[in-house]
Amino acid sequence: MLDIKFIRENAALIKESQKKRGMDENEIDRVLDLDKKWREIKQENDDLRAERNKISEKINEAKKQGKKIDEFVAKAKQIPERLKSNDEALALIEQEKTKILENIPNIVDKSVPVGDATKNKVLETIGKPTKPKFALKGHEEILNALDLLDMERAAKVAGARFYYLKGDLVRLNLAIIHYAMEHLSKKGFTLMHPPFMIKRESLKGAIPLTAFEEMIYKIDGEDLYLIGTAEHALNAYHMNEVINVDKPIRFAGFSPCFRKEAGSHGKDTKGIFRIHQFEKVEQFVFCKPEEAEKEFKLILDNTKELFKGLGIPFRTMLLSSQDMGRVPTKTIDVEGYYPSQGQYRELASCSNCTDYQSRRSNIKYDSKGERKYVYTLNNTAIATERMITCIIDNYQKADGSIEVPKALQKYMGIKVIKAQKVAKEEKKGKPKKGKKKK
Image (tube, rainbow, N blue to C red; front, side, top):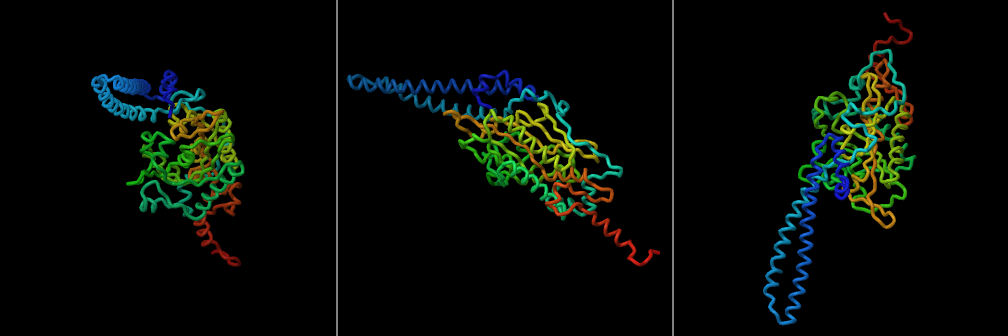
């Protein structure tokens, strides 16, 4: 959330940012009008209280001198009614003002390309995409053939876009989690396993809730929401606190994530690329404003190192002003290459959120006797189900098996996820030793 004082002093800058995002600039004028009205009424209340004090003094003086006080008493009786009326008006204005403020997005960083997704800028491409000589298959077809994925029964049990992982696919999922958590632990990140449900207040601290409500699951009859990412719970960890960020606080949070994927009907309906439930290892940082760029580079580099270790060709993409979310001032996506599709797909997202979340969550630090809002940053280390789809796409073999990336072999204890069904069929038709097949 942006500071109202900052908006007063930088209205033109914020309007320009709104324009870059393709959003309504008039929202800034609306909130400033409300703010002006609020300050006028607040000043009137201050004047009324000062007047009431003066009247009290006059009444006391008149009593001492034996003079009549009727006129002063009549005036004094009017003031509480006017104060009450003004306080009610202030509460309504404050409510409306806060509602607008909570939905004004963060200011777009100067480095961000202006426009829609077509203006996204490729920053670097790492790893050379390969094109095997055999016909490539999508991950769902391969996993179904190996009997490692069952979405049909999951749909029966839970509905569309849910899944059962089975056998070696479960082991692959856990291996990816262990790989990412171990990597970040060695970098000094504190490993975190956050609550999977958080209160509305906690969620509002991380995101403009009205803008994201259609994406998240609400627990009926309770003040609880299923988390869409560990980021939201990690941000709330220091809610309403003054913290020490002489050294940046760095978390590596592992959690399931739950998303409705509303508005994504018809997109990626096959397999486990776009689903309602998945696991993710999330990096989250609290730091001083002057250290934000360094921390942004750190968490982005961590993700790039993980991708390099897995041997996945990828690229980094600076998102345009209209393609990034409302909370960040800047976002760089990490996109993995899918040989079967001949394209890069988003697997991770790195964002600098400045003091947008900390202001909403009231998270501050001491700076030479003055309390200031910390900066928050976040980045996906690995979203496991999406990474599974990318690994399968890049490591599938002609016989239907899947090579396990070297970095994950120590966690799985195998080098290849074998095509079990194919192997059984071949074995059945293979002649025994010493006998010739007729």
